Image 1 (tube, one colour):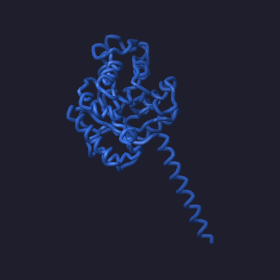
Image 2 (cartoon, helix red, strand yellow):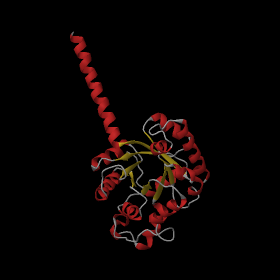
Image 3 (cartoon, helix red, strand yellow):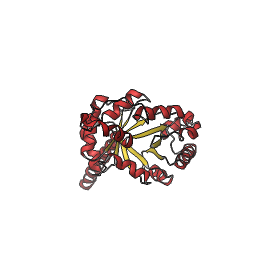
Length: 268
């Protein structure tokens, strides 16, 4: 089990050039989140964009994550002030926002995630993020601004074309590249190892790193993870809980059935 219980620790690790790893989480049972933490992942991305969980289920998933030191991040469905606010109010340490296509969308996301003077996040301290008003109001708003992670996803051609302006926006922590959506935008859906996808990712990464912004991406195999590490990516999203469960199940069944077949051969 990891020990990333302090909200600020992920920010400190990223700023220090360290890499962190965590999967997307789509299983709605808190036990699945606990297992990811016990397994040693640094963070988990509770996925409301492609996953079936509702915002009403999110708080218990966050509680389970924090119980085992797994830092909970929520990927919302769209760049919506209401969705960003609800994700952070629920107690997520960060919010991941898909389909950022230009600098104004990036600024809008930051404004929605931060209180004054950094933004315009709706003010309420009777939420889980403020420990239901247990954190004094004189402390909470600055604390939330300092500690919350804002992760912006660039995954379409418009975002790629506008990357120079996007990375100039202040207030976000990680630029996340979606390789699968990017491959589709480039006309080769699913071909995430195609040179066009890799070259585009390298170009985006270079521009973000020059501005001191951490970069992340999704990988579903170790070869991709190695490539991303070599590219200086730090926020490594590896796998999806449903896929991890499937692959583990498939291997166990295959191994056991192979033993059964070997036993049959010995009897012949």
